[in-house]
Length: 452
Image (cartoon, rainbow, N blue to C red; front, side):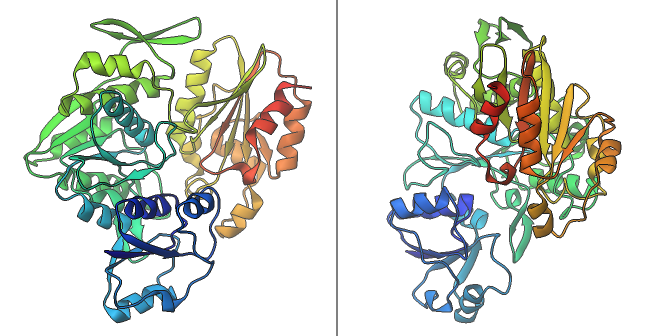
């Protein structure tokens, strides 16, 4: 089978292309710009194209075109594919077609998706189960972010609620038709696509309805709006709620209480304990024994950029986190304060997404940084221009966050100077962003904070 990827440089797109090549497919692709690590990954597999779009790439012998979100609806290769009648897929559509004969597990929700998916994958690997997967971050235990094989009977999918492609305005997770689905919680996000909270909630209502007949929904019983959604649903499926387990923190280590005794963890924070409970419930439905799960979870170190350790000295520690929505931001700050109760916290959030840079959405951040002694916001001015977003003043940010002592950085140099001048004694530092702070090396920035 011959497959061409339009916008092959995307995070999932290039990983899917590599997975298909390993499966024996003939794979080609195109993109106008390809950044790291996509460039190196594609080059290592002999799949790196020359930059640019060219209708000549699209010929009648192509079996399928997979269209990435980075492409535009008037992309010349897309128009040529339509002209020739080549079948055009979004990547979630293509994933579904590739896994129709597998048991599909889809992890959805406004937060925790990557971590929950990562835990399930870690546990299944530890007990020797064969499975395919699609996950939204690079995991240390796995070479790539997508695996697709002919024989694996199980497919684990991180289910994103964002749009499938430029010509398919359905949320991605509507297209997988899971046998087991999980929803970790609902907190308004992607306001450029879902302009009201109720419109956003509707996408999860439809996700539940997409579960295969006699399938299973695993859901967070601590989320009130999600509880209401589950109760109103009349689908003929199994419904299994979970709650955050009890835990204690002793000498910097979090212990989860279980019927087998206290289990020491390498991750921390109440939200991560909730993520573990979610993964535990899914694994039970997959036939994993409790003892095997608890043994495996002791070794789980967390997903990339999810409360990930960056650096430390004898007194202070620096972490980075993918947190960018209000609920994630608040949960991550609380996790650091709970884990290190004697330390003041310097918390820097990069407002990076369309939602976070939307003035109408800013008030959703109210009181999310109250536990941080030194709250700060960074906005990359170049990113602001690229998204055609209005400038946001420091006063507007202070009002939105309800944080009079909030510091605003509109340049990397300003943030760098702030960290250089700050005495790290008695303080920890937390970077939070779904972006990359303009491409800076956070280890170097951490060193400027830790070492004077």
